[in-house]
Image 1: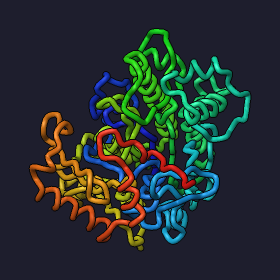
Image 2 (image 1 turned 180 degrees about the horizontal axis):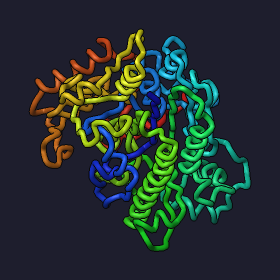
Image 3 (image 1 turned 30 degrees about the vertical axis):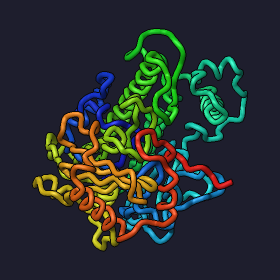
Length: 469
């Protein structure tokens, strides 16, 4: 059996049609929806750690990254990112390395530029790895520089500062010569993945990883995608301020329309990839896993960006659909708790690996088909702020044991009221779970970091830590 793993960056669960719709309105995803009809759908999937690179470390290895011991990376050629924002540890074999040794032909097609920065090693174990340049601040172009008039078009005055201007400068420079849809990023990723399939028809078995940075910001799409959701002219808005929202209603609607348009463009080209598999006869002998690393707040509760504290469902709940060969078990819906490191374990089990390495993740397909749980909670790590989620509760706290937020998941407007003062025994139980999953303690450097962070609401400094002076 072949295995294809498709990962989108910042794809909100509620923007995939089968899961519903975001608060600003339905997003058109006909190809995602058709894929869902032929898949096993998981409703309770979560990351293991966040954001981008910690999530992929867990997904690629089946090992926990939380609680980020030895995770204080400060590598040349990179910004000082979140805890765990570093390479895959050399002593941890990757799924691709294991499958490569087992006779699979392995490939990675990706435009997630963080994976390819100096000191990174996420392409280990791939017979072919293809890095498609130009996302976000990847230095793919050095000119021409934008004029102030161009900066003002792409970046609202309210969001302009030295950092945001530098971000927009590089993003738009990278778009030079890319204004035909086929040259946008998601189309390039799925065209290249489809090309790989046609070039490797002689492979006895393959493991193909397709990583699309879209629909991550900047939300750059051909205008007709945005006009599906907002058909009026006005200023452009394509990035997050990582703060409580300070832009007007029009710019917020423009942001949501650009994001929705980018999801729809991802959907179209994912459909292109699936059609390639169909005409090649690969849908009959390939397991296809569809997921994302995390979501993104786009005006939810007045916030724009993603953050680990206070954590919220629009960022922490992820889509997960698995299409089995021949669409076996299609229509099955599973509510079991699944995390990224479980996906790695499931891939290895499905590939028939006999001598499984020592993993933290657990294969879950058999249990899902029996409606049997593999765990009764998930603990998700982001920097100094663990989140513990059970069927009834959602706990967010700081590793210095302050800023405790306890929410009733089944309550209407669940995240409006903090029940921590009302149920201290529940808080203690869930914190004990987080400590147990951490191996009994938290890294001291993260405890110290937690002390410097403000309590919710409004925390946003986890997107990237500040470098030491």
